[in-house]
Amino acid sequence: MNHEGSADDRQAQSFHISDLAREFGITPRTIRFWEDQGLLFPDRDGQARIFSRRDRTRLKLALRGKRLGLSLAEIKEMIDMYDTARDESSQLLKFLDVLAQRRAAFERQREDIEAVLDEIAGFEQQCRELLAEEAAAAARQPVFDAP
Image 1 (cartoon, one colour):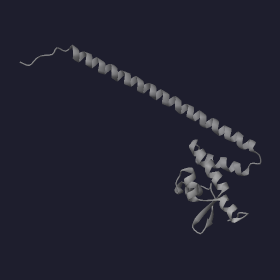
Image 2 (cartoon, helix red, strand yellow):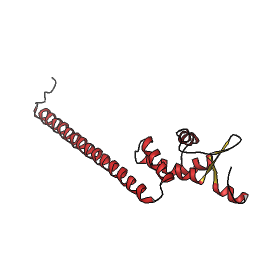
Image 3 (cartoon, one colour):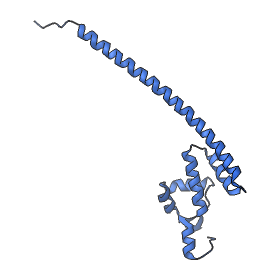
Image 4 (cartoon, one colour):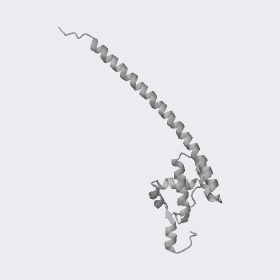
C-alpha cells in the first residue's frame, strides 16, 4: 500500500472488502464485480483486497448510478470525469444532462404505468358490472320447490 502517515492514519484511509460490503449493504461479490469492471483498484495484502478512500467514493458513485438506472458505460463515464476533470462545472453539466435523461425515462414509465392502471380499473369495473348483472338475473329466476 502506498499510504502516507502513521499506521493509524493508513488504517483510517483504507477499507477491507467486508467493511465496504457492510457499509453499503452489498455483498463482497458485488464489490468484486465493480472491481472486474475497472471501477475499483484495491491494493493487495496477500489475498486481502485493501480499498482506498478513492475506491470507497468510486463505489458509492457506482451504486448511486446503478440506483438511478444508469448503464455501466454511463457509470464509468461519470466516475472517470471525477478523476480527470480540472473543475467541477463540466462534471456537473454532464451529470445534469444524465439526470434529465433519467427523469424523462422515469416520467415515460410513470405515464405507461398510469395508463395500465387505468385499463385495469376499467376491466375491474366491467367484471363487477357483469357479476351484478348475473346476480340480478339469478334473482329474477323463479325458484321451484322440489315435489
